[in-house]
Length: 303
Ligand code: SF4
Image (cartoon, rainbow, N blue to C red; front, side, top):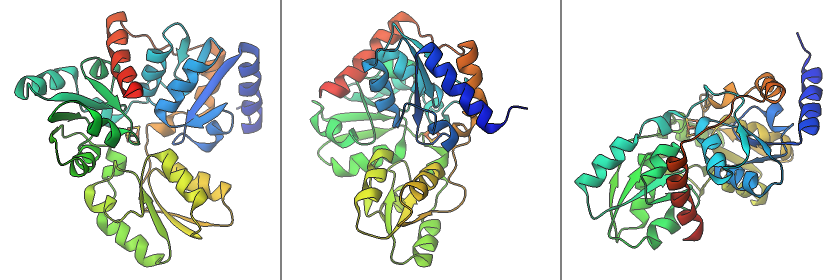
């Protein structure tokens, strides 16, 4: 079996040889992040892919991330190292669900979190990220909004945009949903001086304890800038590991030990190596779906 260092070298060599751009999400294992050209949130990966000159893009993340990159870079080859790495939250809503909700609430516009399939984006009016959701909801010209798929992010936004009526789909991220208020209170009790940075994909009773509520990139930024010496992190465990390595002068704690996205952990160094070696697995999308999904993403960027 290939040694870890040997595998790492082969990945770096293949990247150079094929002039591939490797982009990794913050939740994939650190050894994969370490060989990537950039590590970022899902939409930032798609934007970086689109701006790059490379014709070969590898998205180290779950399926909807590969789809978003393909939507913004239709003429490039976009590869996913682990095609079976899906996002359970994205899979909780289908285009048929969106069409049914539209029929039930004909005056509402559909706002869809980027953590959704290309097919769902294609039947939505506008997309949003966790950091742009509030701004997009406020600016959308309508009195009613159907928000899919994340009920937690949706209710976080709805509470802060009281002038609009929200219809929430009942999807959720199993990883963030798993964390309870009791977990937070236990962690705060153990580390009373720590500030708490939390992702809005967590439930309301968890989010209400946050000193910072924000996307993964915003949580990282907050941890780097805060003068606090102890930080409690309310998102996926790889962020805790990354910050411990990056900020050795601070004490970084996770909330509970079960804050792991199993799908993101399927993106291993071995899978990345095989992906680059065999140029598999290509993300392909039907032309009409790709065009319609692109409109929803463009509206997010331009609004
Ligand atoms: S952390 Fe949650 S939203 Fe992100 S990929 Fe995993 S299941 Fe999906």
